[in-house]
Length: 92
Image (tube, rainbow, N blue to C red; front, side):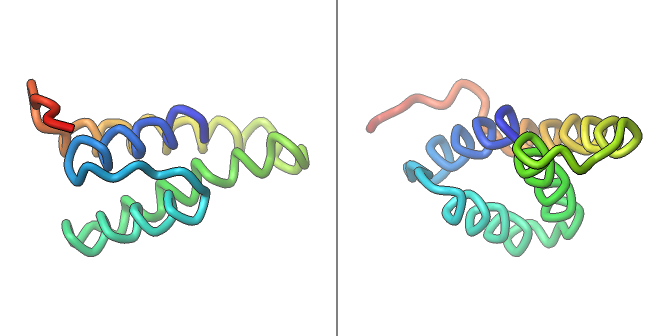
C-alpha cells in the first residue's frame, strides 16, 4: 500500500490542495476519484493495494495473491499518473 498511498496523497495535494493524513481520508479520496472519473476499476485497484497493507501485518496472502496485488498496484499507479497535471506549479 505504501507506494499507492503516497501516489494518492501526491495526487490529492496537486489536484485539490488536500493533505490526506489518515487511512479513512485515503479511502474517501479514492472513492471521490472513482465518482469523478466514473472508473470503478480505480476503487478495485485501491482495495487490492490496501489489502496488502493488512497482509503485511497478518500474513494471510500467498505468493499468487501478492503477485496479483503487485500487478494491481502497478495498474493503479498508471491510472493515478495519468491524472497528474504535468509541471504543476505549487502555490501552496
